[in-house]
Length: 95
Image (cartoon, rainbow, N blue to C red; front, side):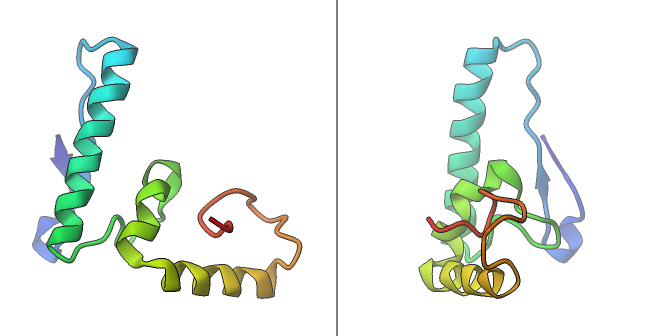
Protein backbone atom coordinates (compact mmCIF):
# COMPACT_ATOMS: atom_id res chain seq x y z
CA UNK A 1 0.00 0.00 0.00
CA UNK A 2 2.61 2.56 0.89
CA UNK A 3 6.09 3.40 -0.23
CA UNK A 4 8.43 6.31 0.05
CA UNK A 5 11.26 7.45 2.24
CA UNK A 6 10.01 6.83 5.77
CA UNK A 7 13.49 7.50 7.17
CA UNK A 8 12.94 11.23 6.77
CA UNK A 9 9.31 11.12 7.87
CA UNK A 10 7.61 10.93 4.48
CA UNK A 11 5.32 8.18 3.28
CA UNK A 12 3.66 8.01 -0.11
CA UNK A 13 0.40 6.13 0.26
CA UNK A 14 -1.19 4.57 -2.78
CA UNK A 15 -3.79 1.90 -2.01
CA UNK A 16 -4.09 -0.84 -4.61
CA UNK A 17 -7.40 -1.31 -6.40
CA UNK A 18 -6.91 -5.02 -7.10
CA UNK A 19 -10.22 -6.60 -8.12
CA UNK A 20 -12.58 -4.01 -6.60
CA UNK A 21 -15.36 -2.56 -8.72
CA UNK A 22 -15.03 1.14 -9.52
CA UNK A 23 -17.82 1.96 -7.07
CA UNK A 24 -16.31 -0.12 -4.26
CA UNK A 25 -12.85 1.30 -5.00
CA UNK A 26 -14.10 4.89 -4.79
CA UNK A 27 -15.83 4.27 -1.47
CA UNK A 28 -13.06 2.23 0.16
CA UNK A 29 -10.14 4.36 -1.01
CA UNK A 30 -11.89 7.53 0.22
CA UNK A 31 -12.44 5.89 3.60
CA UNK A 32 -8.79 4.80 3.80
CA UNK A 33 -7.53 8.28 2.94
CA UNK A 34 -9.94 9.98 5.35
CA UNK A 35 -8.68 7.78 8.18
CA UNK A 36 -5.06 8.15 7.15
CA UNK A 37 -5.13 11.94 7.02
CA UNK A 38 -7.08 12.14 10.28
CA UNK A 39 -4.37 10.06 11.99
CA UNK A 40 -1.63 12.18 10.41
CA UNK A 41 -3.35 15.31 11.72
CA UNK A 42 -3.62 13.81 15.24
CA UNK A 43 0.13 13.14 15.13
CA UNK A 44 1.01 16.64 13.91
CA UNK A 45 1.57 15.59 10.32
CA UNK A 46 0.44 17.16 7.06
CA UNK A 47 -1.06 15.87 3.84
CA UNK A 48 2.05 16.71 1.87
CA UNK A 49 5.70 17.33 2.50
CA UNK A 50 8.01 17.79 -0.41
CA UNK A 51 5.47 17.28 -3.20
CA UNK A 52 2.52 19.29 -4.39
CA UNK A 53 -0.97 18.79 -3.04
CA UNK A 54 -2.85 17.64 -6.11
CA UNK A 55 -6.58 17.24 -6.51
CA UNK A 56 -6.91 14.25 -4.20
CA UNK A 57 -5.25 15.84 -1.19
CA UNK A 58 -6.67 19.32 -1.73
CA UNK A 59 -9.82 18.60 0.29
CA UNK A 60 -7.66 17.73 3.32
CA UNK A 61 -5.28 20.69 3.12
CA UNK A 62 -7.14 23.43 5.02
CA UNK A 63 -8.03 20.98 7.77
CA UNK A 64 -4.35 20.25 8.39
CA UNK A 65 -2.72 23.65 7.81
CA UNK A 66 -5.55 25.87 9.07
CA UNK A 67 -7.56 28.73 7.64
CA UNK A 68 -4.89 31.35 8.39
CA UNK A 69 -2.32 29.48 6.28
CA UNK A 70 -4.80 29.01 3.46
CA UNK A 71 -5.66 32.73 3.55
CA UNK A 72 -1.94 33.57 3.44
CA UNK A 73 -1.37 31.29 0.43
CA UNK A 74 -4.38 32.80 -1.31
CA UNK A 75 -3.08 36.32 -0.58
CA UNK A 76 0.30 35.48 -2.10
CA UNK A 77 -1.41 34.02 -5.17
CA UNK A 78 -3.48 37.20 -5.58
CA UNK A 79 -0.27 39.29 -5.71
CA UNK A 80 1.04 37.32 -8.69
CA UNK A 81 -2.32 36.36 -10.22
CA UNK A 82 -4.84 39.12 -9.40
CA UNK A 83 -7.39 37.82 -11.90
CA UNK A 84 -7.06 34.21 -10.72
CA UNK A 85 -6.47 32.93 -14.24
CA UNK A 86 -3.40 30.78 -13.57
CA UNK A 87 -4.25 27.19 -12.66
CA UNK A 88 -7.83 28.10 -11.66
CA UNK A 89 -9.66 26.06 -9.05
CA UNK A 90 -6.55 24.44 -7.66
CA UNK A 91 -4.94 24.75 -4.22
CA UNK A 92 -5.10 28.51 -3.81
CA UNK A 93 -8.71 29.16 -4.62
CA UNK A 94 -10.98 30.91 -2.18
CA UNK A 95 -12.63 28.16 -0.15
